[in-house]
Image (tube, protein in one colour):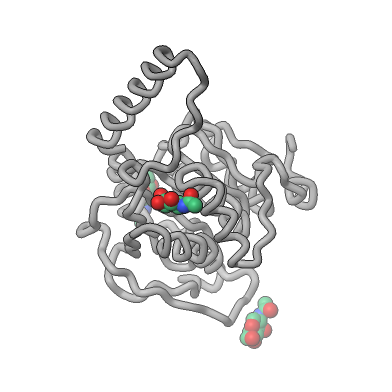
Length: 254
Ligand SMILES: *[C@@H]1O[C@H](CO)[C@@H](O)[C@H](O)[C@H]1NC(C)=O
Ligand SMILES: *[C@@H]1O[C@H](CO)[C@@H](O)[C@H](O)[C@H]1NC(C)=O
Ligand SMILES: *[C@@H]1O[C@H](CO)[C@@H](O)[C@H](O)[C@H]1NC(C)=O
């Protein structure tokens, strides 16, 4: 979180508790504060990302952007279009022949200041060539208000050590393999999404939509989250412990 944001928030919390003492009654929950609400979102791109991990959350955020001004940036190591096509056939176990590309707006070296970083998952998180990206995540995290990961994006972030000692979840079909790489994380085996401090991690692929809508509800209010979900004709799961996929994929400890 930016220092100025942290200060503003601390002051408003102090004022709120002060007025509560003076008035002696319960103060209603504050309405979303346009000053504190994040405005600048960045999506990290790397080869062989999972498409819906990005497009699902962006659908909800693009609708939110009609309520409040948001900036969106796509960040990658270079400005070359980033494809979902795996680097090596061995990283393409589903033998897919259908790929999409996204054009980055900035390189990591030239990234604008972000309030929120979104890290998608996908088979590309297993690439051995992401060391620069991992270093950038580690440098960038302390400057963020929020970090949101979708699917195995949490496994990628976990490789930086940021998630050590924190509660987090990941894709349930890949749970055993992905969690074994970062044993110091307090992995949650049954969760649609998990919030620990300012880090939101979500389960496989479509879970990113529920996590993003829950994030929108938390920051921008329930009315925004509900109207966005209704516009998307999306039936939300609002219980973060709803997770039938923990059973379907035999997640140990679930
Ligand atoms: C993968 O797809 C290609 C092209 O469709 C096909 O020729 C090949 O046999 C497939 N390989 C496997 C292992 O299914
Ligand atoms: C990435 O970093 C790891 C750990 O420091 C190292 O073992 C690995 O060789 C590096 N990979 C590349 C491709 O440089
Ligand atoms: C939606 O969020 C925006 C930005 O925080 C806010 O200005 C607006 O009041 C919210 N709408 C509702 C209905 O809560």
